[in-house]
Image (cartoon, rainbow, N blue to C red; front, side):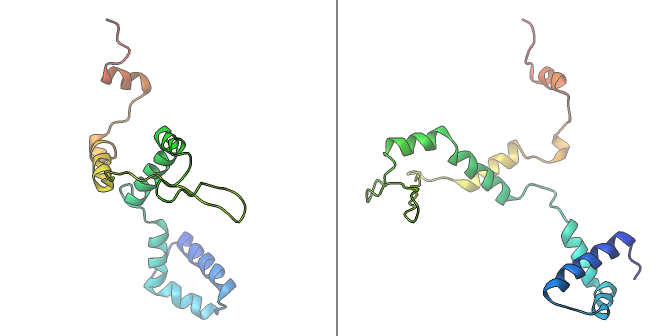
Length: 145
């Protein structure tokens, strides 16, 4: 199996890194390089999904919710206390207590993510790169009436 120089050096670096914790020999390194294991390591390190993973969307939505005005207003309205037991939110050392906001009707996370994928994170065949001026023209913004 012929391997390009950068792959060889990348696998050698990975071997060196692993060798810090589990010492191996040069023979082990050559066995790794000469098997498909080296190729699999390289594929996993450079493989990217062609779309935004669901976990990334969920984390972004969670951050949006946690920093929203509605979240802050709900905490303030409740006096930073649990509506069921009355415990108060605290950041004191050794007494940290958080209060979460519960959506009574529930949140359809799958539906929200589906909408985001359909209307925002769509396939690249439905996307076009434009400068800001042309983008305004396409949407009809800034036109004189």
